[in-house]
Image 1 (tube, one colour):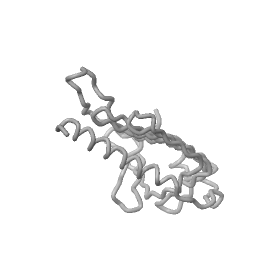
Image 2: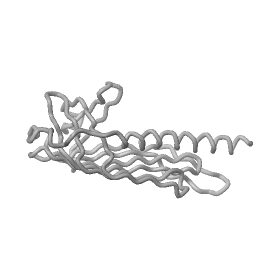
Image 3: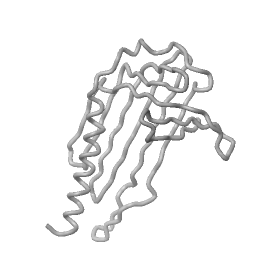
Image 4: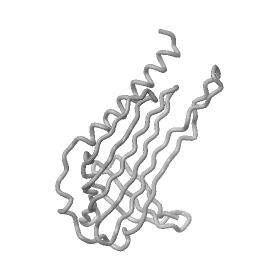
Length: 178
């Protein structure tokens, strides 16, 4: 096996493993969404967006083609009555292997102090692994997700919602929809 095909194989396996973990997460059962709070704090209501895109692209000098960039986005809207709708997208491209995962969910949000939990009642997860026609689709498989939250003001004077994963290892800064 030459160095190029070894890299391609390793990149392919990494993408398959990453998406496999994400897909498997959607298979866990979740509690009844009716257990969520019936109201959402005023400062949390509305639409929030997070996104990032890689500034590095892979360029194949043999074909003259560039791979699409890697990136992720998360957008959700919290209503006064405690309902939410959320859309997420993950795009991974490595050496000719383009994989993606889209997750849509709708349900209730439970707010307890500085923690809140998305409790999906409906969901759809769709994905594709390495442009190979290997696709994934699952309905109503999303599980609850709990985050710590706080509101900050960024350097531009805009309100930012900071969500922290339950284990404290992940933080994302969400801005208001413009």
